[in-house]
Length: 357
Image 1: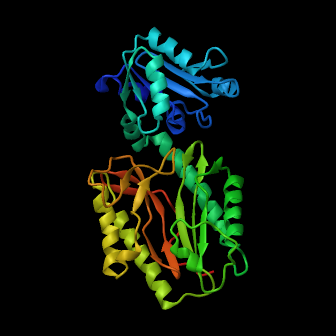
Image 2 (image 1 turned 135 degrees about the vertical axis):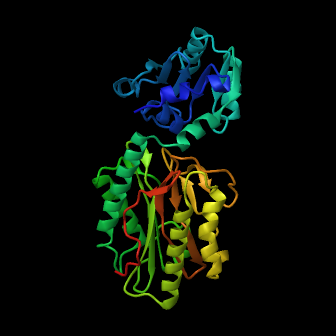
């Protein structure tokens, strides 16, 4: 799978002769081939597509990159030389670049080396990546199923005496075991008072009876991310713990009910936030309802209080409200939603009722 043609189709309307892709995630989106960091470059012109890389990746790129000419950068003929040749070959006058990612030093070097105008165009890729096509959606569902298999297994291992780090390590192993290429991000596993840290780092803390354990994790499959959070209790819950959990769940369900293409990110976030505020926990929900997911774990557009723009059909966003009582406990529940004009498809099948292990 690649998106060269989809990118090329946008060039004329943006008055561009080509689009230069140096950012790792955008190179993958265009080509379907992953190389790390700055070890690659893609060029999309109106007539032809190119993928430039070095000798460490050339053979792999030629096996996997379709619909593009793969060229090898090396000593004496580096990326700038390959790019210069293509710019001259296609008479490129206006070349789009990723202004959201390219450093000032890189921009200045290309501006000196190339006989064309560099035009900021990061939004071209952002807009395309925001809308998932059927093949992307299928891959993301598969990634979600891998994470859910890991969740099913890990619930059998959470007990008093096990540390947060041990659960985090096991989640990573289980996702790889079930077919993941990597983790989407370092898993968050926090228990008891550590649960009030939305992005807490797993520690040597021992899980104890009567505590919540929050697990936020996901995996990469065929280049696309999954993301989910579940909070479970160990042994027993207090009335306060149950109230907090039920409030978060009702808030999430309200946000999901409001989530649809055409709704603003602010409206979706607000539907969930109102539930938490009405329950008296407004100050304890500091982050937003959700972010988009795709090639990267955090993409746009987002369901945030500041986003007053309509969410597009085909966007995949997280649904993850939470309540965090400092030094005491925290609860977050997260699913991933595919937005349609009629509403949304919840890609997450894992149950959400309170589990007491």
